[in-house]
Amino acid sequence: MKMSGAMSELHIAVTLDQPAVVRSILAQRLCNVHQIDNKGDQAAHIAARLNHVECFKVLVEYDARMGRKNFSGLTPLGEAQMAGNKEIVALINTNYTSPSREPCAWDEEVANETAAWYEVWDDEEQRMQWARPRPDGTVELSDTPPPMEVQRVIAARDQYGERNRIRRIHPKSLPSMRQVEHEQQRQRDKEKLELVLKNRARVVEHRCAVKVQAHFRRVRARLQAKQRKREQVAANRMQRRFRFHMRRKRNQAAMKLQSVARMASVKRDYDSFLHERLWWLRASRQVACHAQRLWRGFLARSEHRQLHAMEILLPDPTDHRNFDVWKRLQSEAHPPKKELGVYAQYTLGGTPRSWPERALKRSGMFRDVTFYANTITKRATWTKPNGWLFKDHREYYVLRVQTCWRARRARRKIRLYARAKMLLENAHSQDMENTDPDIAVLANYTLYVHSVLHDYDRARGLYSQLNDFMQRRGVDNAFVLYSYAIFEAATGEEDWADIKDYARRAREADERMQKREHSAADTRDPPKCAYTIATAAFYLQSICSEHDPAESHHNYALCQMLVLGDLDGARESFLQAMKCSPRDTRIIANFNTLLQDPDYLGDPASNAHELFLVH
Image (tube, rainbow, N blue to C red; front, side, top):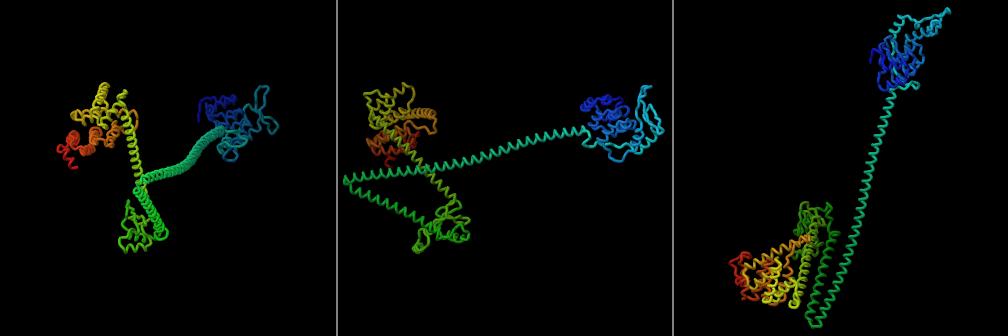
């Protein structure tokens, strides 16, 4: 309890009957509602004594204690009863209750003693006086409040005491400030809870929306994937059918062309009276058709025997009750033809080894029936294991890749030979006397005169023009240097040191040109030698033409030796050249250089004549 020596602001406001000021002081918590002054009075004692009802209602709202006594030993209810303020008494009885329902004898006695007294105005003395009627009809006047027997009142107060009064909740009672604050706090908690619930509901709605959207996208993606798969399967089927149709059309067209070509060939042979050739073609055709028919019949019979054994003769290998039967068949079969991991391929009733076996197999139930078994568990099956299928597929695709690679190399070689043929024809058709040729045309024509016509005297002058052009330009030309090195080696007019230097300069120039072209083209294909087409166009064509084969093989051997780096091929070409001209000193000297020079084969003990005689 807060106690001060003088009246506080709350006591003054209640004394002056200012309920608004009292409410403001209590709302701002400037004073305690239970604070007492130097007489022990709370603000409730003063309001009850002075009959300030509105101020007392405000104090009741802020739960002022009604059971606390002042220094005179009176509660607010006692002060109100002493002062005869019945409205204050009614407010206290309405808003507060006592834990015990027994009546307080002291309060009742005080009420009886003070009930007969009332206030009157004395006109003579000009002041208020207390009056009480006596039984004899006279009126007792008193300047002080109604007198009481002090000892009797103190005894009654000590006997019964002052009962504590508790704020009651009643429809007619005034609202408590604690109730108001509790109600406000409850309202704030309710709003906060509603806000939390709204936020949580919003979060749950968002999560549900995310899950629904994810599920929808997943379902839509699954449906789209299925649709794309169906479209891809349909497209693959259409492509397969189209490819099959085109393949069948091409095969039919090829068969028609082959038939027409065979008929034309037969007609030509018939018109030329080549009856023996016609008989041979007819016989070979009949043999091929008969062999194909036998092979197709063998495949059909093998498949029929397999199906007959699977469906009728032999028991089901997947049934565990037939395990002993298949284990015995594995021991009776030949050793496995193939093995892959733990699986082996067995053949029932293969080729008989003796006449009794042949008779047995002829009367037996199966022949050349293939099955597969696990060598560890001895479980048998008709179908190939997955690993076996994968191996077969891998071998098939390896064969396909090899076939595609060989076809690619063949196409490249065919294109190379076609370009070489065109280059040779263009070089042959050039008229070098009447026109002013381009340097490329001049180089091709010079190599044609050198490697095909073998006119070394004319080629010498043309090479001089090419060397002059290269010197004026100031940059080495690989084509000119390679051709000139081969020419000098074939004629024997230069030492091999100079010839090697020409070949070295040509290789360096060729490497620079290949790097420049490869970077400009930005391709992954390896760079090609600039002399590849010239080799196929002039040197190989010269060998095929069979014009002066010794010189043709000699030039081609030098090309392999100086340009291509194929030393074994150069040795074979030199042997072919010596076979055509065994006494040519130039060929023998160059062949010895290939065999004995350290930059090439490097075998000092080898000799061209001895190697030629051996072969």
